Length: 64
Image (cartoon, rainbow, N blue to C red; front, side, top):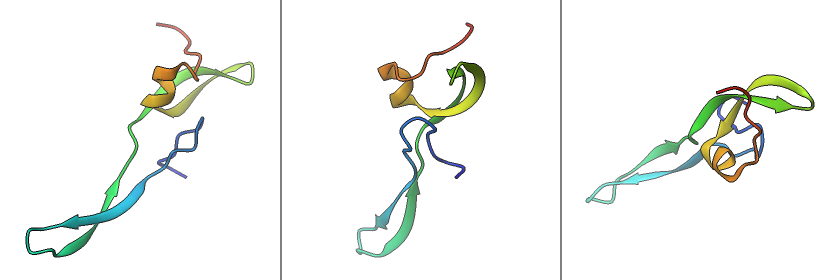
C-alpha cells in the first residue's frame, strides 16, 4: 500500500464532505507520512513513517 505507515500501519480514512445544504461528497484524509532513514531489522533503510511514530520514538533515526 502506498499511503500506509510501515511501523503502525496507519492508512487513509474515508468520509464525507457535508455542505450547508447537507450535500455529501466523498473525501479522503491521508496520514502525514515522512521518508526517514531508520534502523530496520539491523540494517539502515528509507521507510515511510507517520509523524506520530517519529514523535513517540517508535523509529530509531540514523544520521542528522
